[in-house]
Length: 90
Image (cartoon, rainbow, N blue to C red; front, side, top):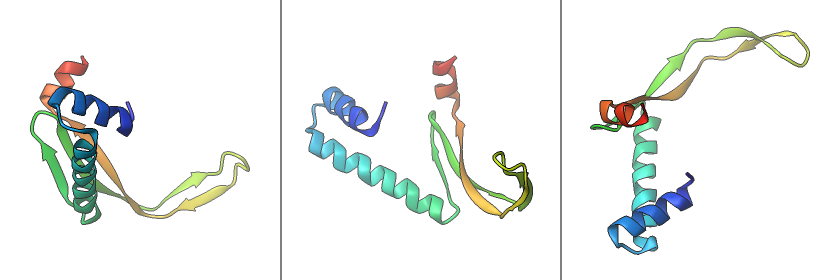
C-alpha cells in the first residue's frame, strides 16, 4: 500500500474528505520525521516503535570491483513491531 491508497482507505473508513486525511497523514509523517531527526523515539502503542541507531564505521566490499572500501559511520531508523501488529501479521 502506498500513501495515496492509505489516504483513500482512511477517508473511506472515517467519512472524512481525502484532503482532510491527506493533511493529517502529512502532519503525522512530518512529526515522526522531526523526532527521528533529533535521535528521538516514537512509540505507537500496539503498532510499534520507530527509533534511531548509530552504526560505526566499517569495511565493506564493492560488489562491482571487489575492492575493499571504507563505509563511514552513520545513523539509520529502525522499527520494532508492537505485540498487536505482530499478532495480526502471524
